[in-house]
Image (cartoon, rainbow, N blue to C red; front, side):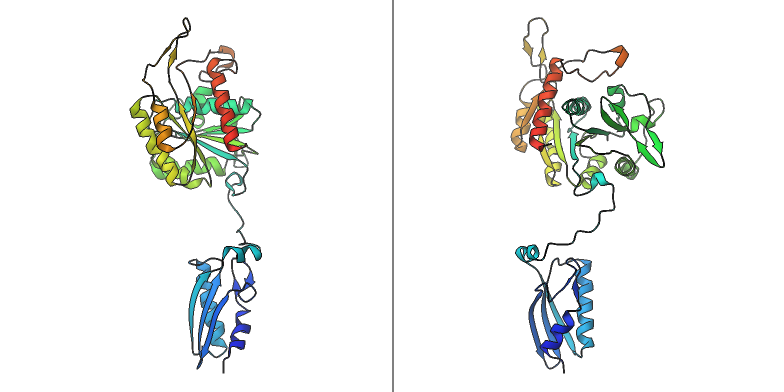
Length: 351
């Protein structure tokens, strides 16, 4: 005849998969009743509602019936946090993906996004990456705007990545490792792909590229909340976002949608950069607010974040010998603004 003692001994042969310990040693046996060959159990596991719970459930039924029980009734609950801590915590499964995406990766992902095109998002991306590198950080940049790639041209990149043993080695420019669809296409050809193909290419940028040790990986996202943005939000284990807008009310309004998507996917908003904030006369120093005022402030209020900086209208001095038409030099007034933005980013990420 089956007894409580027999049931307890049998349960010592059943392991909690997440803790790799038997459910008696974990304290997982909460209730036990035996009556006329019918066994009723309440079991606590590290995690419930998982495929592993179903395995444990079936194993318990088998071992208890193997000891002579007529029927086995089971209820489950989860072990309390303090119990899990005493048991050493849940065994994390080995991570088989690219190391840059591993949960313990030291790389901070900064996605630069906007609600609409034409607000200077890519200009902000390349100058943020350049300023972070000037401040001594190891930086990479992914031009994730697959349809509207512009990073290679902005940074003056003409060479192509090296491919060695099926691994892609990114192009380096200004100390930044760069990957873009624009580096792979011929003669500025358009990319005509649908959503699933875009996702595969983005995955290649993470899985096939030798990034090495990076402090920051800047992602120049396409504007809006389409397939690429959704894929990246799903793909990245953690990401911080910078929203780019102009002072115009409409640009700020549509940028708020991109910010809301970041919040809903549990990604942190670092702040807002207001581009084309004003035009400053080189003769008089007077500021003219060509696109109005207040877009950046309104966006920060709506998303409860910080205004990282305001970039005036301007253009870098073009060096024909070292051509990079969108990169501001370190001593340019706008270059100094980007340096201050980068210092705030480092401070906020503790990079």
